[in-house]
Length: 440
Image 1 (cartoon, rainbow, N blue to C red):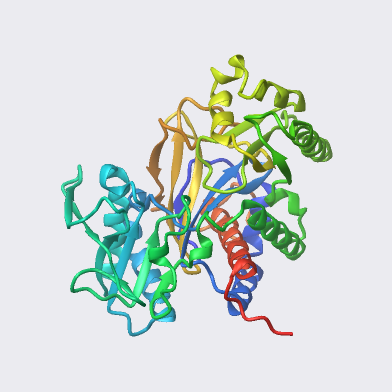
Image 2: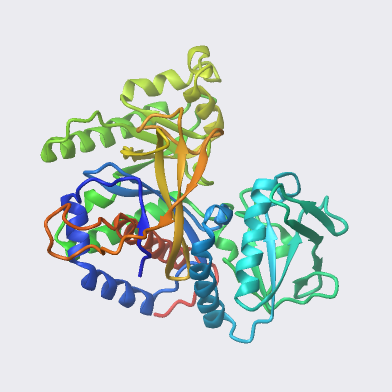
């Protein structure tokens, strides 16, 4: 299930949490049945926002970095999950090749994540080496990390049907490269080896709208199971197609979608008596949620992001202007209901990130940004990462107890939402699989 961890919120359990905790047997059975029919992503990480009245995933990463942010105490969970995942896919596995991002050699923080992945799979009983597809890596390159560890990046060797290293032939290749620049030919047509995750999980193929559609359908079914409004775990969203912020095209389309989503959210806030100002986030349809995320509180603000072929000077000098520049280029944008975060760590706004391998939650951490507001994107320079710690409380949540009477295992609820996003990702992968077998 989900480990009992310490979270930033220590107040009484709210109604949504209580419903989830009381429904644990039904929830776990539901997940078991889903995994009998569908294959979970090999590993994943889900960013979650907890507004108190609402809890929802805002980004699902199928090539998670940041494994170095998990505590040592979480390592056994990750190792156990890695063993289960490998056993299911390739029981006779001996050698594993990790393929990192191409920018790896200059990024020691990212390489600490690679070192942690190597450690996890080595402890799971595999020979693990790191093979770079970066053309600049022409010979083995040892890189020392600030914590004293070293990572050796080696140039990959491609034969007709296999990928490996000099004197190292892996049966399984683990991608930790989200392929946002496109699918390199060196990774294609590897029919004799297991490539995890598959190429169509990369951002060269993947679209956020596919994931959001899958999650929306699942949240309706899950809401029915729990007897709750699916909106409590699902952000409203819309697709704005043919928008180009650089050229000022499709702005009326984007404005109407922003207005429509804000109107729906206002209606929900009124229904639940929520006295907060609704907002939406505008983001790209592909790639992780990085700097290109704009917070919009009123449809009239959309006009301020564009003008005469480039963002207006007033907007360009702001964070929103920088985000608008990151979103420039023709294509599809996602307009998603913004979810507040009411968690604080070290006086900074925080959002939990849940890490999973195979079907198991193996841990998580907080992304914290002291300079951001509860309604803003936290995936920006200046963010820090605070590991979640295991709870040493002897009191587990007691089903049926009065709210606040027992230790609130909030991480269980985060794990449920994280796993829902993971099921949605498995649906998404099945729907976009280019080699799927079609049965009439």
